[in-house]
Image (cartoon, rainbow, N blue to C red; front, side, top):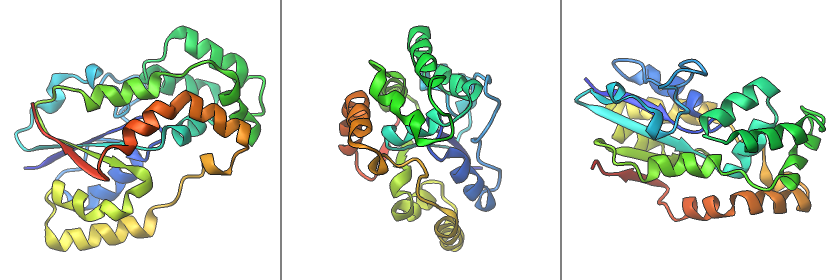
Length: 221
């Protein structure tokens, strides 16, 4: 029986894809929330995942990522407790988290004002470290890398990867198309200064992601 596991940094659409795929698999895909402090949480880096999670013989792993600038904006919009939990999973140092929290509390959470934190902090390595942990892993199984922003154009490739069959593929693609929505945190709508701050923080990761095919399968080691 095929087992599907979905991973990705927070605010990248893992819950959406998990809830969409569950209708077409013999057993629900393992993703979404496993508890914010669960070692095998869907947002954990590869190095933090227990080997027991990957014992299934027919295992399909999806790594769903997104533009890191938009992910960071989504994390900033969260309350301080949830923001801290996301940053912890990304492997941020205490120093990084303190710096972000210091600027975060000075802003109006829930408004675009909070996005100006990107102009004020020196670095944020967590998202790139998290992405690299999966990209350069020695995983003994295939990993399909998919970007949320272009999820719809790769729906058939996803269906083929998880082997749901022609009939369910049509249904899955239709459901995905009907329920997918653009990101509410959008880098392109912000001020020039904030965009420059985000480019400074995440330019290298944006470039790294741009070199991957729209749907890319990392072969097992």
